[in-house]
Amino acid sequence: MLHESLVIILSAGGSPIDADTLAGVAGVEVTWQRLEQEGMAACLAARVRHRDQPVELRARLRRWGAARGWGVTVAPAGPLC
Image (cartoon, rainbow, N blue to C red; front, side):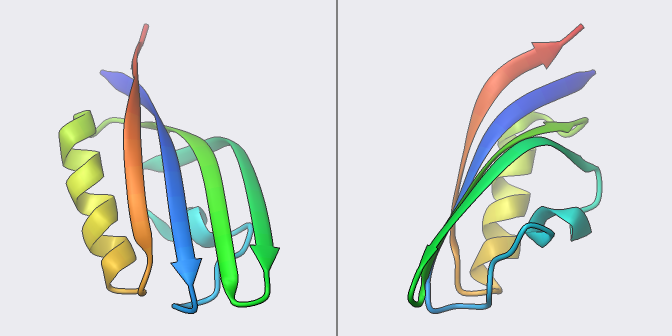
């Protein structure tokens, strides 16, 4: 089943965040995103589609982000039909 979630990535000096940040995450398709940066701080908000259960995606993205010095929040938007 295909799911949709909202992803927020926050960085206060970790690895750089850019428009291609989520492109390297397997099984995640970005349908919308917005990137804001000021100095060393950056925030990426995105709507993504994925096959993982939302709780599994949340855990996977938090580990992925932590390895880069980022805080990651994932909020499920629901299954897609």
